[in-house]
Picture 1 (cartoon, rainbow, N blue to C red):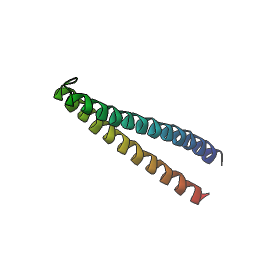
Picture 2: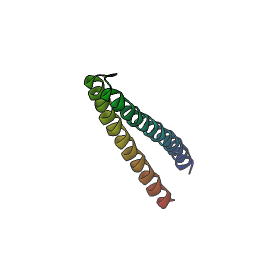
Picture 3: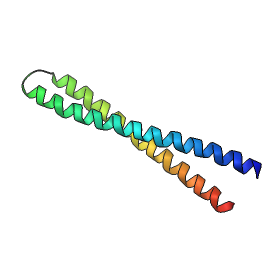
Picture 4: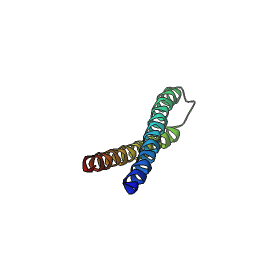
Length: 88
């Protein structure tokens, strides 16, 4: 029982940390999308270069990949906790 309590507490901590990580990555991703739209408008008037837009699109692709990976890790952790709860 003591092992399960320690394991459960550790998993709960991991779950909380992973949820916070997903929220942070979602916020970063959305901020990048918003910034890209702003910069596209600036591109039209020559205030930023196409290279700036290209770099931002690369950052967005990376942020999206990181977010998807974090969501998958969260799902895996939730499934693991669910399986452990079924065994108790």
